[in-house]
Image 1 (tube, rainbow, N blue to C red):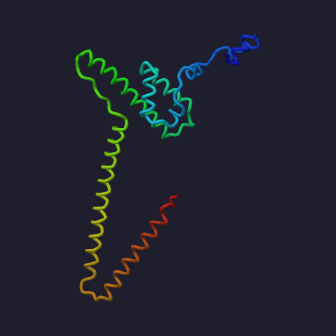
Image 2 (cartoon, rainbow, N blue to C red):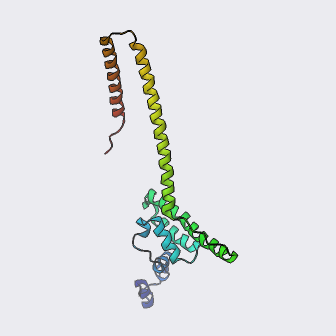
Image 3 (cartoon, helix red, strand yellow):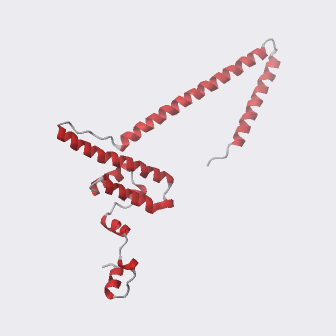
Amino acid sequence: MDNYKLRVLAGLSTDRALVEKKWSADVTEKKHPPEGLFASGSRADIVKWLKSSHKDLQTAMASLNFFINRAGEKLDPARKAELEAAKNDLRAAFMTEELNFIRKVAGLPALQPKTVSEEESQDKEESQDKEESQDKEESQDKEEQINGMIEKLAKHAEGKSAKDLEKLLLQVYKAGHADAMAANEEQPEQE
């Protein structure tokens, strides 16, 4: 028996806070998620547990919101974003179940939901494609700049002696080296 119940039974306390349980205590007593599920579990694991331990979307969502709200400002922003994404996955899981019931009644085949890992892999592929296209554009821009510099050098080099060409190339090298050193000084060191 809980300590506060003993106090009330013994007549030692009539404090309302001791007499009535808080609703949050009731939630934590009835539902026991695996240790660290919300703190570090994957979205797929969270959705799987919530779906199996709650009868409907509303109670599953309340349980997830309960954890997010209890963590408050202590919750890492990246983890909060992950949990918010789990809400969408949870909605999709319950909606798929409801749609499959309707499809079954209508005599249609059931839908197979995408797993979280499939969605993440599609997102990763799309972001990699974007990065590759940006890298390609940047390298093309750099190549065009280099070609432009070579053309300028060639114009300056026309009719000059080998000694003058050597001085010109040395000037270009020193200017490039100075630019690189200045760029390195502007960027903060990363460790």
